[in-house]
Length: 100
View 1 (tube, rainbow, N blue to C red):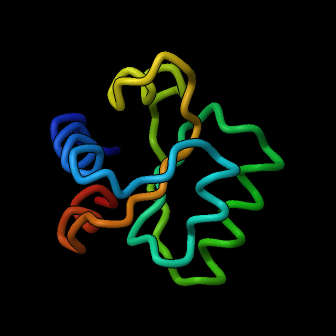
View 2: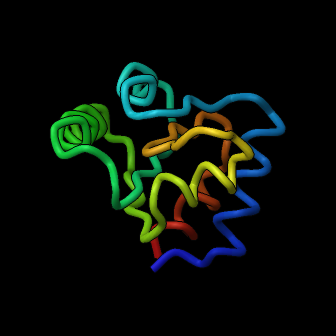
């Protein structure tokens, strides 16, 4: 289970730097060059499978969140649901801490 304080910190840092892709389709396109992928529990099945496959192919770690897409949207500060998020500029340490 992901620590919500750590998740919030990582998301805020990533959003501040502007190096993220929000949404499942955008995350699939941005897997290459990403350091980690966040997936909510409410991601559509087909898109989730495709995103997991692309991430595995490129060796990018996936963090499965217990939050819904609406909760992730609140953390990101967006008025629409966000089911997945590609993190490009986070440190490897932050990704490892999220995966615990």
